[in-house]
Amino acid sequence: MQAALIQLTSGDDPQANLLRTLALVKEAIARGAGFVLTPEVTNIVSASRRIQQERTHREADDPTLAALRDTAAGAGIWLLAGSLALKSDDPSEDRLVNRSLLLAPDGTVAARYDKIHMFDVEIDATESYRESSGFAPGDRASLVRTGVGTIGLTVCYDLRFPHLYRNLAQAGAEILTVPSAFSPVTGRAHWEVLLRARAIETGAWILAPAQCGDHPVGRGRPRSTWGHSLAVAPWGEVIADGGTTPGITMVEIDLSQVASARARVPSLSHDRPFSGPGAG
Figure 1 (cartoon, rainbow, N blue to C red):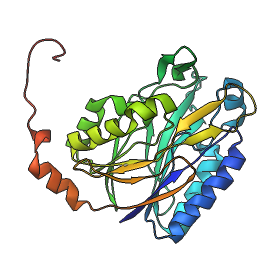
Figure 2 (figure 1 turned 180 degrees about the horizontal axis):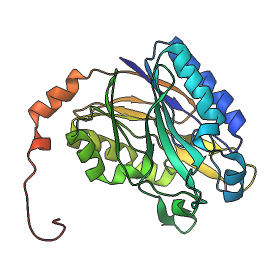
Figure 3 (figure 1 turned 60 degrees about the vertical axis):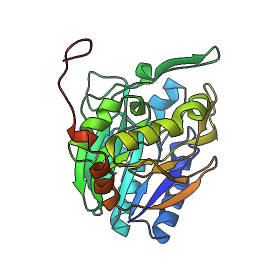
Figure 4 (figure 1 turned 180 degrees about the vertical axis):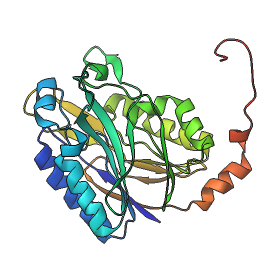
């Protein structure tokens, strides 16, 4: 199977982002991709909570999702809307949700996942994030069996919580998706090593489409992201790297490598009960 990782530099104008996204998705389809993945917050990148609220929609009304559904159906492909910033369907929740949506070849939503782990960090004296002030965390993992393999959905900061990936792999995930918008500081230090670790620990393919570069925002704090969309094989090898500019990274996915890696080191079946700190 040919997969395509779409790398974007989304800004705070969802319509402009959509036009760029569709152009790259359609190019990937023309190049033979049967599974196309976009990065985290494909539809809008903004540090302004006011702009986020003004320019986002509920899932049922979101123009980006509607266009991606039409594109998946028109081409008959699987398409991961890596994540979209959406208004919550919960009337008591005024924060957005950071939602990853897997679209089937008929354009229906085959799976959805709301990012569980919120990026609330102080990286250094000049760079800090409080994702939970604008986004409500999810509380449910998502796994779906598809025509391109069994897929477990995650988003960005989830990458630092290995138990999520282990649980998905033990439930049958062969492909783990990690759409992201990593900070340049943490990206340079941790991005590749964490993705490779999750692949090695689970014996699964890791597909991680990313945001990159300096994002065009009219209001609020400027935002830069690391890029380097990666595809990592089940044995831990980096198969493809998207670099630091918007574009398409094509990768051949061979699911037989999942069974091979897990047979060589069957650690997913070697859990042992223990007592002491952290035991539950």
